[in-house]
Length: 341
Image 1: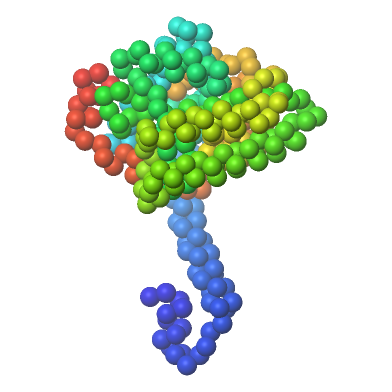
Image 2 (image 1 turned 30 degrees about the horizontal axis):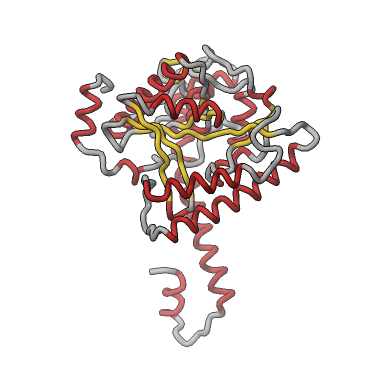
């Protein structure tokens, strides 16, 4: 029984104002959050205590690194999904290396490579970045690839588009690509141009929602899915949007694409000069035993997004569970046939 119901039961004649009720409800939410934070803190303190006993005398940062590297890997379904994603990454790397194309680790994947040498144990997806120019070439190459395909997936509930590289023989296993566009910016106008791209991104999101509505797409779905019947409209929208800024599509800076979901853009919060990205670093960070490219200032990139990324996480959960709930035995058998698991 909620707090409001308890009060009304105890004092049925009392007329409680909406403002007071709202404050009570907010207080209840804060208490629940505090209880969750305390539970997480208890777990972290206990884990940290027992693990540090075996580390000996080391500098604080070295101790933190050792803690993350000793965390056990995921098991069960989560590990199966992780291994499938690594296989796709390896194939993508082979294709890109053979054709002079490049992609780089992003978000939780970059964080995992830096802290854990692979997946964050409770994570189950892969995020990589790529320039739009390289992506268009990569996409054309995959049209003739027998194993991999690249497709747009849509989250109708939130008016978002994702680009996913997947195994052709399964709709379960994939990795996400986030595109970057060149933009004619420098240190003096980066902030102004970033704001312009934010306005364009918001317009893109709104109009993508209109396309969904006109196509009769349901907002009840909690999954990302392909919607082939709207692809031509989405492509036309993007061509129009990309042409709205004279600075877009060329220059000495990179901007995360205006068609990239808003929560990803907000995590970046700025344009980046090419000199802060290139040359990409290879042979420095291994992810599940394979070296993948990372941006030049990758530690600064992680700090911009996560703050102190060596601190223990405030919340531990497995994302994207709804997207993988339909994994069947046939999907697992496919991975076995390929020697992935």
